[in-house]
Image (cartoon, rainbow, N blue to C red; front, top):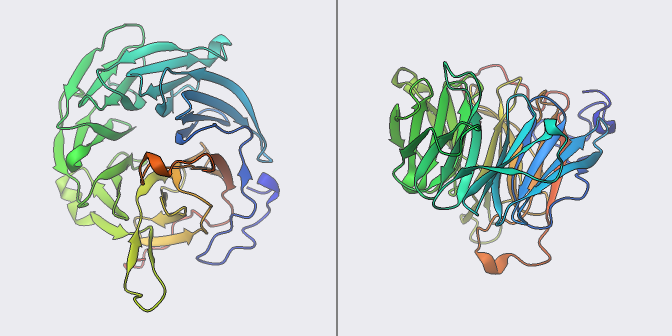
Length: 363
């Protein structure tokens, strides 16, 4: 977008290496590790959840400037956040075993009401549209090995579904709900029948799942793991020939023993809302844009100064937000007061995220 963040083109970037020199830092970021961030589907507002027990809502302007507009607190670290479809409500998923919601349409900017409860920390939450239901519902996934559906007008869940293990990640698109748990289980739900699993698979990746994100058309999902791999997985067996996985977020050590490779966790995957291309971001502090249909890497970006813990595109796809923060991959001892906590806004320009013509080749 011409003029966004003062950029007029994708200058200072090459065909395969992107430019982060003009990325803009969010004003007054969280004071502790950043767990999640999500753009509003209706406006240029960004919700950011943090281990400092807070969910913050910022307004982003066309020059990349940001201003805090609202904030609410949990009793323990907040592990995830999400928006309602109409952009009026923000929910935080907390280690305090509660989901809390702020209704921005009420003018309230400091307090949230509890709308969900589990027997263990809630790792993630999403608003969902259940067919034949008049209002959006909330689905929460917890380390108590359940997902629960909530009608926000009621204090008890409409339904509770037991998973095989602790819920690590979940995402929704149209009638597709995908839940990733410990022990590499992935549960697939058709929201036309939300109280049962349509299908359960083991992750095609060999190690712990960090993130699942649905395709824009709801036909499948991407999986990221701690082993520096990403998998593209379709729901229906008829499309299984299009499933594949690829290595990413790895680096080869230079020197005499140059066959040694450092492998980093894939912490975040986000799909571009217009083009259907996607990003991966990891513990190595880099992010990349990919075209799953052409099996091609579009752009790779320089290391940003710390692990990237969360990412999201805004509703038009011209801003890519990423958080630089400690991701707990080395335990609590490595989280020092000097650890950086920031959210950066990257203007998506030129052909950075546009899909490539299909060539049949790999990246």
